[in-house]
Image 1 (cartoon, one colour):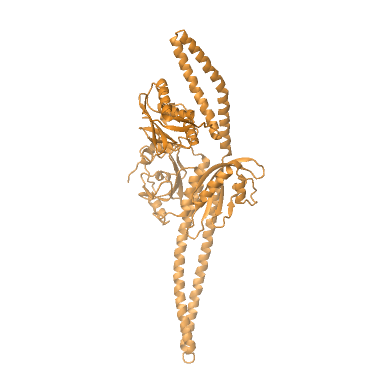
Image 2: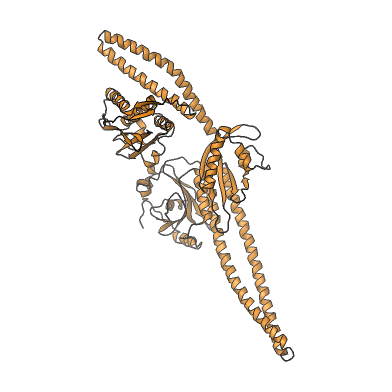
Length: 594
């Protein structure tokens, strides 16, 4: 068996461990809703893209539940990190997998899959064998504290309880089938005896001996029926025990949800009956014993968010889709504002169970208040710096004019550089202020008709005058009249060119083009820089987002430039995106409707 971990992964009791696994009759079986639901719950609680319930056999690792790994059902034992997790009775955690010596050659970590984080809690049988794991996986490093480990252990125990209940159910079903066969045989004998009794009644005077024999047969059948009834009572008691175990498993699941501080809700797809958890009622300002209808939850959404949130939730319900929203609510009694993160989806009917909607609600008020304090600080600092910087720029220009008049080339050159730096500072401050406006939807858009060819030419003149570290190549542009904010679009082009300079090696070539395609004016800026991973490309235009890599460590920035570009282009009804290959470079595009 291949071993990619550089250490022994076979425990001394592995033969007994594998036998313990096989007695549960679960290896290589189809997916089941109970296990899928737990894996989905783990992915939601820890906000990860991948969650698995794995079973470690002698040569293979089988996935009983798979969230985020496509159609994968197995993996070689010598490759799956779950093989390491069953070696330890505690939760196995790799917060930054590429830094772990035992994972340096593992293809999941070193290969294209790009595993960065792993946490796995062992599934331990009552007799102490660790037969598998409940694990979560992320492609970005992350911290995993003791509270999270405790939640994982609780959820792993829930999985193990479900496996035990599954085995009990299989055994009970087999027993019931045997009893049913015995009952059918008894019924057939009873029918035969009844037929014989009817014939005996017709011939009672001449067939007394046969009637006596038939009565004996009936007595025997009744005794057998009594035996069957006794067996059915035993089965009933066993079912009561199974139900008790199910109730215990439900209590453990509720404990895990409570530790994650989540509010839970259910809606019957047919009756639309709304069932909120006590924690959810607390979020909305209700007492645990009070009735909280669905209409109340909707009415407490802050007015400026209400219509949009209700529209997205109704769309998800009607189209059997999931949703993930953040919005403020007003508490029922205190009228205090609280920010929540709400998720929900439709669970389709299966195996006799009705379909229902379910979801979670998480309080993110503290996170939102921290963001607001940061934004307020940035806004105050930006306004306070704007005035002195403007005055400084004016003073520098006056001094530069005097230096030019006195033919003082050295002073003029120094002042020119100082003026360039003040312009950069002003641009950065304008970015902070525009970011603040973008959050409130107040970036001013002054629509006027102009030629994109003229705007690109201005960008070319400015770039050739200010950028000497790279070769900036502008393709010829045909006359392209557009109706847009000339200054804002120029700001986007400049930002994309400056980003290409910042993230590509000195001396490399940057290509800028503007073409007309599909009734849009499309601008592209192509560099030969470090490139961007697909996982990061979706987040590049988020506020404050910066790629976490060693190459970025020495590159300054706040993560607002591309965010503002996206807000400006969206404000024009356009589109902005990136195409990139790691190590080969990136091409940023934006398009404006003509």
